[in-house]
Image 1 (cartoon, rainbow, N blue to C red):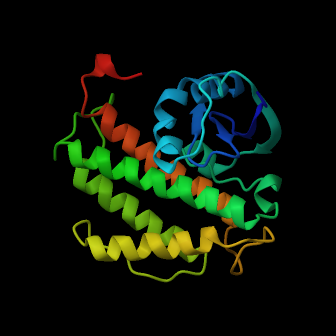
Image 2 (tube, rainbow, N blue to C red):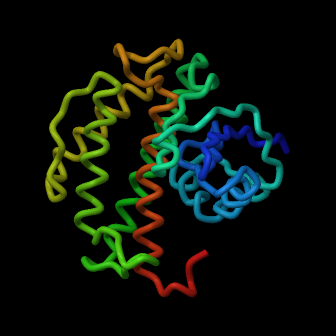
Amino acid sequence: MAATAVLLEVGKKRVFACALDWPGWTRAGKDEALALEALAAYVPRYAAVPEQAGIAFPDRVGERLEVVERLPGDASTEFGVPGAIADADAARTTRAQAERLAALVQASWSVFDRVRAGAPASLRKGPRGGGRDRDKMVDHVLGAEAGYARKLGIKQPQPAIDDRAAIAALREALLEVLRAPSDGSPPVPKGWPPRYAARRLAWHVLDHAWEMQDRTEPAEHTP
C-alpha cells in the first residue's frame, strides 16, 4: 500500500497534519508526533466520507503516513485553522482528479447533514463549558462557506439555515469550480487554489460535524 502524503503546518503551540489527497482528513496536536497520531486515529471517522463518495479508502491507510511538506504556521494555525497553502496545492488538477476532490467535499456535506439531523438543538457543553449549540454551529458553517466561496470567485449571500434551496445553490456553485480541471492557480486574484479550497472546505465542515457528534453522544463513547 502506498504511503499517505501528509502536509504538516507547524505553529508554536499547534501543528496540523493534513492528508493532501483526502480533503477533510486533517487533525491537530501540540507537536508533530501528536498531530500525526491524531490523524491516524481519525481513520475510522473519516472513512464515512470516501464511503459516501464511493471512493476506495483502505483500512490501513493511516499506518503509513509520509510527511512530504512542512510549512510554518501563523496566527491562524495557533487559533485553530489550517491556513497554510502548500506547494502541493498548486499542482495541476485533471478532470478526473478534480471530480474526485469535489466528490469528497460533497460527501463531507452529506456527513454533516446526517449528523445535524440526528443532533439535539442543545448540545452538551465543551470541556471548558463553551461551544455553539446546533443551529448556531450550522449558521457558522454556512457563513464560513459563503466567505470561502469568494476565494473561488463565487459571490452569494450566506444562506439561512432552513433555506435548503439557497444552501444547495451555494454548494453546487462551489462544486462547479472544484470539478473543473485547473492549472493549480487561484481562479481569482488573492483567491485559493482549488486543491486548497477543497481541503479547507471539507476540514471545516467535518471538524464541526465531529464536534456536534461528540457533544451529542455520551463522553465515554467519543474517541
